[in-house]
Amino acid sequence: MLYSYRFYLSWIISAVLMYVAFYFWHGVFLNDLNRISFSKGLFLGLAALVYLVISFVLYRTYESKLLAKYITQPVLRGVVSGIFLGFILFSLVTVLGISFTKDVNLTYILADCVWQLVEQIIGGIVIGLCKVIIFEPIPELVHRD
Image 1 (tube, rainbow, N blue to C red):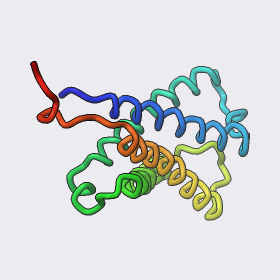
Image 2 (tube, one colour; image 1 turned 90 degrees about the horizontal axis):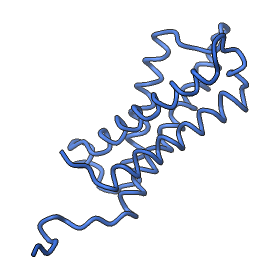
Image 3 (cartoon, rainbow, N blue to C red; image 1 turned 90 degrees about the vertical axis):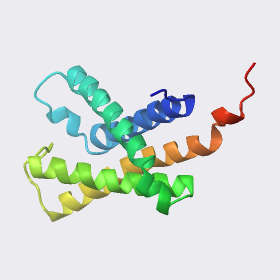
């Protein structure tokens, strides 16, 4: 299956922006990255790879036939995709007990859930905007010599 410029640009840009949001939240605002017991470089490199995978799954969710059938507006579909994937990721991370802190309370869980949703909504909006902004002709309409 050949992917388009639209796919590559939206995949990479959304991954980068979600990673920046992750770094801002955990590295600057909460200062969680200082609690890591191993190499920060290794952690941040692995996190970058994880955000590439998350962005890919977000793009595939965005392009799903079910969402395309019920939500035709591109940016809104990106928001809904981000909410869906963000909640799935939050649930998975919470169930597995992956956390920077040992003091998990309801406030922490709610804040973490909201932030996870915000990260993935940012990625979904980028994918939706790329869908609108990046023009790609329909292959059947392109003149072939």
